[in-house]
Length: 311
Image (cartoon, rainbow, N blue to C red; front, top):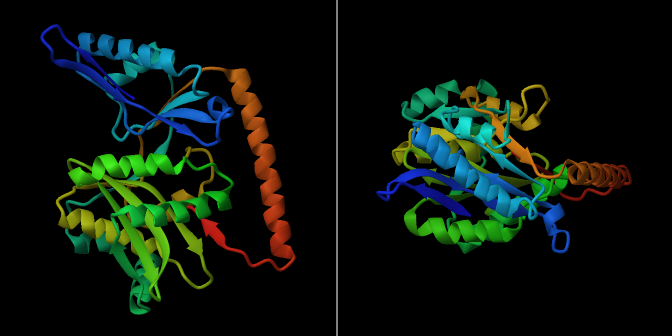
């Protein structure tokens, strides 16, 4: 969903882009959906721009309130005038961390900022023959979704429908705004990441891997993306989030190894029905607890099924 507000002269005053993410099929769609803005809305830094943005935010909310549980906005930059409009419309700002890496530096400088253990891991798997390939194709999307599904199932976190990824690929690929990178070990795919590109920004969108004993492809995948971004003129790598400030988060620990800057650009959220949200959250935690117990029970009985993790 894209909404824009125009002046009488036809100039753009404000703009927003929202994606409805649904994780369960209908008729449970409205109870398992959220509206996600993968970047903050834009507006002119004037009173007219703020008013225009508030108007289209209200239009978005009127359309979405019975189709999703809540809206979440994930900024990629520090807050500007858009925060005034969002809070005016009932959105709450919450601290949320992220790591960003300056790709305008030399490759040697970027490499030197990686933790020693991270550099050692990358060298080790390069010597053992791990390859990172550009598989920006329908096949790459299939691999990406396969590995993302493994990782999200391991974490008991719902994953968006594959149609979101195929749709993004169909729209963005002709403009060179999307890449899929796949890690191969012994010529077998073991992990994949998808990145989005806009102007000078390289954005880590989704990823996943198959946990195989003795193999750790995530560091090599990430380093390859740094090098690709640097060589193609991108100046900033956005890790796509590092969790809430007061909560432990293993993914944040992983991202910290790459020497980026820890920033807190926050997130905005508006819940349309707190009673519904509380019911769904309770059900979600019950199912997640059941899946965890089932997985641990399988492990204790000698089931060596695929172990996965999210990066």
